[in-house]
Amino acid sequence: MPDEDKDLKKDQAEAEAETEKPGTEIEKLRQELGEAKDKYIRLFAEFDNVRKRNERERQELIKYAHEEVIVELLGFYEDFERCVAAARQKPNDGAALLKGVEMTLKRMQELFRKYDVRPIEALGKRFDHNLHEALMTAESAEHEEDTVIEVFQNGYMLGDRVARPAKVKVSKKPAAAVEELPPEEKAGGGDEPAGN
Image 1 (cartoon, rainbow, N blue to C red):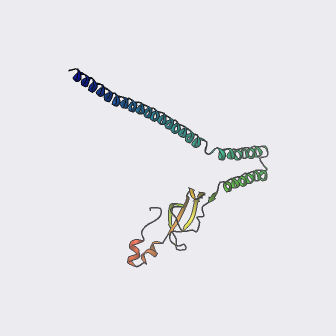
Image 2 (cartoon, rainbow, N blue to C red):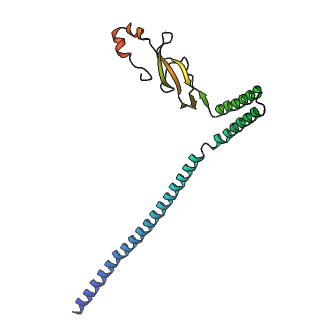
Image 3 (cartoon, helix red, strand yellow):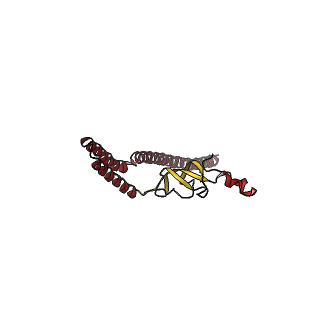
């Protein structure tokens, strides 16, 4: 039996050594998992901080995006104040008032050039729904159909974008001219730009 006890103790020692190995590996894996979890939490917190900082910066950019233009407009405001003050001091001197207004208008035109603001050419041009807003239509034998025949309010481009469309009156064929058309042209020609 002593040999059996020896063998049993030997088997027991081997079994304990084998169970210790996986236990050590499990502990090592747990430690690695904890480190990865900690790294993930830190990265997530860092990402969240960057996101919040970017949002603050975006909000600030939106809030102050027009600051440069506003500062320049303050100069125009002050020019108009001076014009009004001069007109009150010399109510009969229209020439001085006119000169002040012309100077202010010139400064404003320079500002528009600086920011690439240009008027939209409309009068006499073919109606373009991207550039013009038709407020009304009018029959006209002297203009081609869909021609801008009157501008109520100028439109402006800001770079390549329409800042404000031109508000216009658009020509349409007189009713008598429509009746003279062949039947196939009458059927498709009833659209009016202003929806009348």
